[in-house]
Amino acid sequence: MSESTPAANWARSADLACSLCGARDTIVIIPSTLGRVSQGNWSPYACTSSGYGRHGPIVRCRQCGLVYANPRPANDEVLDLYNAVEDPLYVAERAGRILTFEHHLKPMEQFTGPATGRALLDVGAYTGIFVEIAAEHGWDAWGVDPSRWAVEQARQQGLQMVHGTLEEADFENRIFSVITLWDVIEHVTDPLSTLQAAWQQLEPGGTLIVHTMDLDSLFARLMGHRWPWFMEMHLTYFTRTSLQQMLEKAGFTVSWMGAQGRYLHAGYLASRITALIPLLGRPVEWFVSALRLSNLPVRINLGDLFTVYARKPQ
Ligand SMILES: [Zn+2]
Image (tube, rainbow, N blue to C red):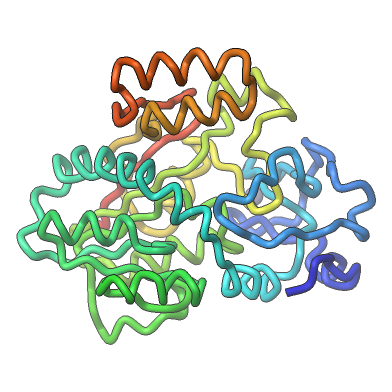
């Protein structure tokens, strides 16, 4: 994996067509923080990489309003990077992710009904944490991911994983009742084609669940160009409106949208605060430990993450 992107690759992908409407008519709304784009260093796409604040130019389509990174490295290069991702830190943060996914699963089953052995596919499943939780709750749970390392990690735990992208992976004619995309749609090179592929893999009446960042949220508006989700591994920045439009274009009917947060253990959160602000964090760590609250789940939601439930019509 190369550390820098050759200028030619940036140039080749410049003036990318809008994934929602196909136009090539954009205006830059957030300038690049990489200096001259042709010399931008391209960090590996590790899931927990701290690339906050580093990104290329972010544009808005003047025809439909979709916001996306443009120019950016060529699609095959993006995929090569994901194929090569190895991210032991993600494995270390497993506990927090289990909490988050447990909390995602409950409202999901209120919508989809109980598992009863039905097939579920988690797209961008990575090391398979959601696949594992869904399987424990009775789903015939599958994952698909472009990272060979992550797929191998998941398979070693006995999980059902397919290597590749949703568009290209071979599911051997398997059709799913539920497909989930947790924090994935913002990473894919052509989100409309991903949603269309999800439509193909779903049974009629099946449910698609998409969780991503909300560019229209109050927190995003207050933060402006300092919104931490502006980072180079995020290729599309949805609003509730643009995601609904894209889902409808792919054939889905949107049933529900709402802000859903993430969960961390109080002990982990306190250690993160100490890393940022030791004077504040150390008393918090002492307090959490004295009261034996380390394993208490803490919900983090600044309102800038949202979930959409959509249905493939019968
Ligand atoms: Zn557009």
